[in-house]
Amino acid sequence: MTVKQLTMPELVAACVESGVPGVGLWREPVRSYGIEATARLVRDAGLSVTTLCRGGFLTAIEPAERARALDDNRAAVDEAATLGSDTLVLVSGGLPAGSKDLRGARERIADALAELGPYAAGRGVRLAVEPLHPMYAADRCVVSTLAQALDLAERFPADQVGVAVDTYHVWWDDTAPAQIARAGASGRIHSFQLADWTTPLPEGVLNGRGQIGDGAVDMREWRGYVEAAGYTGPIEVELFNDGLWVRDGREVLAETVARFVEHAG
Amino acid sequence: MTVKQLTMPELVAACVESGVPGVGLWREPVRSYGIEATARLVRDAGLSVTTLCRGGFLTAIEPAERARALDDNRAAVDEAATLGSDTLVLVSGGLPAGSKDLRGARERIADALAELGPYAAGRGVRLAVEPLHPMYAADRCVVSTLAQALDLAERFPADQVGVAVDTYHVWWDDTAPAQIARAGASGRIHSFQLADWTTPLPEGVLNGRGQIGDGAVDMREWRGYVEAAGYTGPIEVELFNDGLWVRDGREVLAETVARFVEHAG
Picture 1 (cartoon, rainbow over the protein chains, first blue to last red):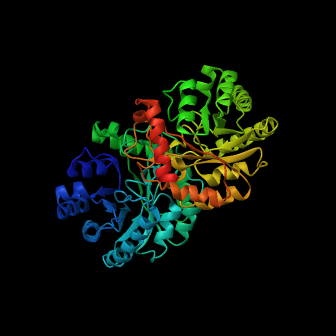
Picture 2 (picture 1 turned 30 degrees about the vertical axis):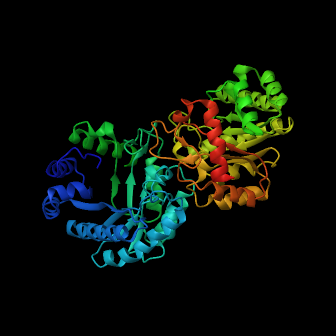
Picture 3 (picture 1 turned 135 degrees about the vertical axis):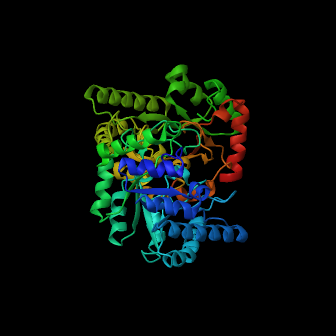
């Protein structure tokens, strides 16, 4: 998503050229290029698919809508398996229209995980519940902290459900380091992502994630927390940024690699 | 601030007309009208000044800047005392330019409170540390949760330092109800403010606070938490909203009173 302006073959070529060994993919571009075709392309280039983003949106109340969401998440699991990725990242979903019941919404996520966890594990895929910054609690993700994500994940085996740690979403939270240790202790850090916090936030607050080093987040500090918790998996850089998307994608990827080395390497 | 388009006399008249018994004031309009003049105007109308907003911005590292901030906060305390308000709300301040050290910034706030708390108590004014929504952690307020605010406040006597509970800032936090109980147990709920959470957020995320009833927050639920914690003080409605500011201020005040009765009364 950091360089979504690149086509799938351009992305894969740019990763290989930049020495990036794995790539996190989003479902929409994968589906556009073709799931099998993407799997082949990435595999032939020697890249791993670190995670597939994203499943989730599991907070609907209406039965038909819930059934559709579960179907879509099973499809996402299948896609991750086809791509050879062991992790599907879940963005849980916001409040249904008119609802003010955060607690109820979080319980419906747990109900959905009970169905999806075994399905995913049966296909070699782990679910990673990603807490999103509290500014998304109403409209995108009622899971706002690592503590809440772990409260959900720990109801299930770690090879079914864990959490995703994204610096953009948790950097402000002084309880997050202890929660990372808690997640690591049960083997539930299923994804680790970097983005920097820059202000002012843009309208809608979706596409203002800062390039590594441009903002308030100490990347080495957070890398230290997950590594101290035993995490040895890939580190993704996931930037939603209108300013980066209008630039040349290869240049953005090269810059991102350089920033990673400088600030998180 | 909800009806900042009104002049001070218009505001006071509109409050009286609407049956609003007290008003939270901001320093800028008070200074424009004159501190003594405002105090007289409000007193003569039989209104109380519920809180003065705001002191704070206590995170500077540079000594001269820190000294200026402390001076300004002492002035704010004096202004609150002159207005007859017992509470000065503090917005703690963000990260200094280039700093990524949230923990250090929070400690500098504690240092400042140690100086300001006794000064305020000596003038019959309590300081209310207001946690702001985590989306302001970098640029406005490194105190993002009630737990953090109480960790700071509890280092001092309750008649010096407590907290402000604003639904806009804490509604997403599943630990906030327990923290409200903690605050109430030591008599530290010094202010309770309502605003609703509406999306999409505007650019800069400052002026998109929703009118009561327009958003995701269950006002009665939160009123219930503070009252169960023993709070019997005023309830303020504090809306920063460009859409409300362009309308007739008297009409907005009347609407706000009606919404309060409907959703929080």
